[in-house]
Structures are given as C-alpha cells and as structure tokens.
View (cartoon, rainbow, N blue to C red):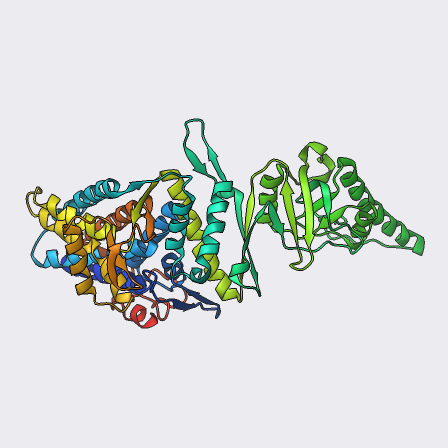
Length: 544
C-alpha cells in the first residue's frame, strides 16, 4: 500500500538517529576552534559579499548558510544562550555536540535512547546543583572582581589588547544603570545603556559618556550648536508641507495664483515652526525631514534642529530626557518636552545630550576599521551582559575549564548511586563536560590529553579552582589568576545543551514531504554550499 507521495523522504530508527547526530555534531565542530582566549576567528561572506570576521559563536551560526532541520535546532541552543546569559554560546553548542557523540557510542551498545535521555536529564540536574555548590558568592560592589569577569569574557574577542581600559568602562557603565529594589536586590537595566561606534581611532580612546550621542549635524549653519538649558522636543513628524493623498491637477490662469499657492505653503511651514516655539522648545530632534524654508525659520528663532534622527536614538533620548515622542505637532504641549543640556563635539561631529534626572549612559567604542569596531562591539556586548548577570546573580566560578573538571569528577561519584543503564549516560555526560578543557588546550596548541590528566590530578588533590592557563600552559588556581566566569551562564549552557541533545535523541523517524532541506527557494536542492539534503554534511565542512 502506497501512503506517501513520490517526492516524500523517510528515514527511520537508527538511520534517523545517525543522520540527526551527524548534523548536530557538524554544527558543534564548526565553532569549536573559536573557544577560549586562543580561539581562531571565522570569516563569513554572505550572498551579497558582506564580510564578517568574528569568533562569537552565535554570530557565526546565525551568519552561516545552514540548510538542515536538525542543525537549526542546535543553532537555537546558541540563540537561547545569548538571550538568557549573554555569553557562553560556543560552550553550550560544543557540549551539545559532545553529548550526542557520547550518546552515539551508547546507542551502539544497544542502550535505548529513553535510558540515555533520562540519564542526561539526571546528570544535568545534578551538574547544576554542583555548579551552585562550587560557585563563589561575590559582593556586587566588588569592582575589581567585576573587572576580572569582564576581562575574561573579552579575552580572545578583539577587545583583548585594551581589555583593562574597556573592562573599567564596562563596570562603570553597569554600575550607572544598576538600581536597588525595595527588597535589596540589584537590578541592572541595560535599556538605559546605548552603544555607539566610531571608526578611524584606537580602541583605547573608547569612552563612557553620560546621556546620549546623536551623530548628526544641525540642519542650518546659523543655528546654535550648544544649548545649556535645553528644552527638547522629540518629533516623529516631518516639518514639511503636507501633501495631498490623491494626485491633483490645478489649472492656473495667472502668476498671482501661483504666488498664492507658494504663500500658502510658506504659511504652513511658518505655522509649524510657531507651534514648536509655543511649546517652549529650543532644541528639536526630528525623526523625519525638515523643509529648507522651515530650517531658515527655526534658525531665525534660535532653535537647534536635527533631522533624520534614528528611531533608536529618539527612543533612547526619551529615556535620557524623560520626554515624550510627539507624533502630531498640533497637539504638542510643554509637558511633553525633555530637559537637559545639548553640546556639540566639532571634532567627532556629534551632539552629546544629557538629562537632568535620568541615568542613561552611552558607551562610545572606537576602532580603526569597520570590521574591528564591529567585532569589538560584539565582545563588549557579551561582557556587559556577563557583568550585569554577575551583579544580579552574585555568583562566579573559576574559569579555564576548572568548573567543568570539578563538576565532571563529582558527577562520576554521583553515577555510582544511579542504578540501571542511566548510570552509563551520567558518566557519558561527565565525559562530555571535559570537552571544554580539552578544546581550550587544543586551541592553545597544547596536548589535550596531558592537560586533562594534570587537571584531574589537581582536582583529586582537592584544588577546586585548578584550571588551564592557556598562555603559560600551566595548571593553576584560575580564580586567583583572575579568570572568572558567571555561574548563571554556565548553568544555562548545561541546561540548553542537555535539552537540545535530548530533543535530537528522541527522534526516531524523519518524514519529509520533499527534500529535507529547510530552504525552499527556487533551487529545489537547497542552498549551494549549505548543509542540505540527505547526503550528509559535506557542504558545511567545506565552508568552514
């Protein structure tokens, strides 16, 4: 009996598991070489020829042309990790790939996937508890430790050369947007923190500025460029002549009639400027256009105006100035204005806007080229998230693979108390965790086996903070050495990796109405060079 169409494809049982595990492992292995301070970068070129150079796991996976349903499930791990923890995306994806590799060995021993899934879940729950047990409680006001957390996150991400200066900026920025709740908890509101970039200068010249930056010029040369007692109108309406919605033809018999039309347009613009003046505003940031004649009238009234301001700039100015964004000039009132000061930096050709009471700040990142400053921004964004998490959560861990080796050792002890075949899955989970120190060693050009043996020996001797210093190649107390990671990011990585691995292992049948490719464009075979089709992962391996 034929129950499926001619184009349908079906992969069952062990073949389906092999297919899924191969796809997931290919994704994990594509980013493994970026892990750690000595990790390498990837150059990604999209279909339009735009080049991205990065070693940020989630950026690599988002930019790659991946055309496989299972591989896309693993990419979701990286995206979840980025959203929830801000960093640790490569670790989460690499552990997910290693869990599936170890699960493949267990499947070959005829251990049922259900037993493996249960064992992985038990191990994940226990691992999260152990991470909490080995975590160190820190004071959210401990500036030196927060700087170490920021430096650890930035190391190997383009921001490394100036990491001390940038780490100080990050800690200062986070402290300025941290508020204490009535219950005594610290909440970091990164909505009040804006990142602006500028090319042509060194990263060491990056700075933290109170308020907002608007990278625009005044619309008229006669306008003031500095307003100390600024009353700012944020406008989401064009200061231009209103055009009719329908196409209209007008017959004119004399030049006087034409002049009447022109006079009417001029009166319209005059009225708009008068409305702005009546609100009391002396600075206008307009998201849309400003007519040339209106520019002249605004300059005549001594009002500073900026046109085509970005929507994101207006939203941030709204927070900084405690103002409202006005969409209709006819209903604009003084109550909707924001109060502060506006100054102009003629060298950088940008306005600095500060508010009277708001606590918004802008991190101005500088770099020599567009690619440099883009990668710097990615590294800084991760570090900001990590420091913010540390301030909110108050727990940190020793880095350099120390926590993975310690938790793996404790999981092996826990496995002795687990009965049945799940015990093998718990031990496989412990082995997967040790991938992190192994890859750190490989990426630093060290022997991964010798490094792992030395790390295990140190932890068996009772040194919970023993990790790998990739620069010297020695096993040392990484917590004392200033290699510090947030506990929340590690817990999230373990959870995301386990859930993704279990999701893949639970599939025993793949039914597709056509090609298994997820790209259903004009080319039925999927995107060239992608990971499409049933034929395995060749395109992916070649791309990386």
